[in-house]
Image 1 (cartoon, rainbow, N blue to C red):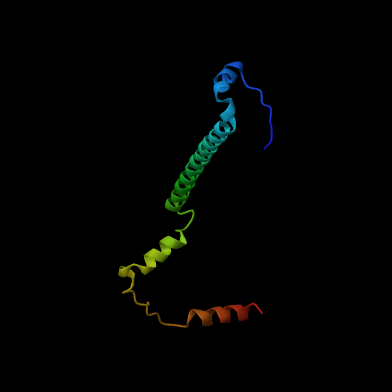
Image 2: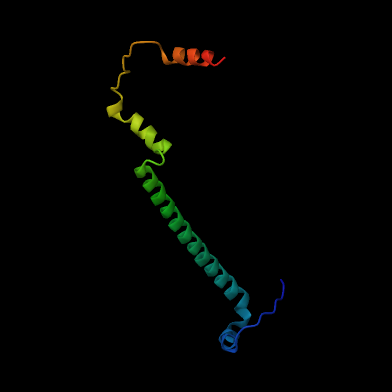
Length: 107
């Protein structure tokens, strides 16, 4: 065990005097409470930041500045209404052939 010296206001010293033999336990309990409150404050700030970020992303998506999240796209594609889609029948060259021809024209 270690000994530490601390300076406290006179009024607090008077309040602590009856608990002198239990001061290590009192300090430990107070430290636990202090840590809990600090963690709660950090979480509150974190939640505010998360909400602000979600609102910003939502506004950007609505404005068309960014696309939907991968999760949203996945849910949309996997929904039952999308399983009946059929490919569009198009005539002409396949896109891959057009790309190859286009690349060859630059050589």
